[in-house]
Every structure is written in structure tokens, then in C-alpha cells.
Length: 100
Image 1 (spheres, rainbow, N blue to C red):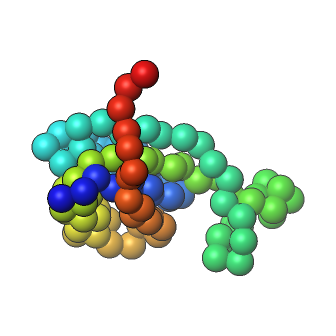
Image 2 (cartoon, rainbow, N blue to C red; image 1 turned 45 degrees about the horizontal axis):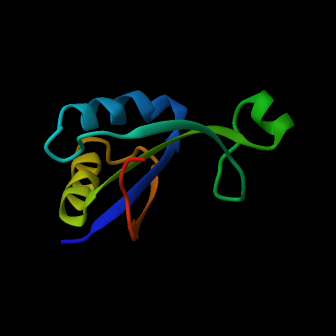
């Protein structure tokens, strides 16, 4: 099965829980990258005063690459453990990867 890139975008307050789930399953996620991001748009609820002034909400982005079946299992794991976490995701094919 081909490799895919799984990208997860979530509110900052759920990021540690997702990281813990991923770290507990090295068979599905041997590694991942975490970045801070800013959520913009009509689907991003702005709640805090600072968010309303800035016009965006803090988000965490987690990316991991691997076999599609494993990444779909990760999505199932997150859905089962955090059904209301408000995590946006996408899967895209990986054309090539390696180390330089």
C-alpha cells in the first residue's frame, strides 16, 4: 500500500492528548512533526478576547507519513478516544520521501 501524509489540525488544548495517543502507538506512528499554526475562517470559533482582536485562533498541526492503512487506523483511534476534539484532517499521497 502506498504511503500517505496525514495532517491533523486541532485546537491547542487537545494537542497533548493527540500526541500521547500517537506516542502510545509506534507501530502506527513511528514519528511525527508538530507545529504551531493560526486558524482563520468562518469555521474557526474565536472565543478569547485576544482571538477576537487578532482574528484567528491558535492551532496545532501534526504531520505523519506512512502506509495508508496505518494512518486510517490512527484516525479511527483518535475518533474513538476523542470523539468531540474538533480535529480537521486530510490524507494526501506521497510521491517520494527520504533523507538527504
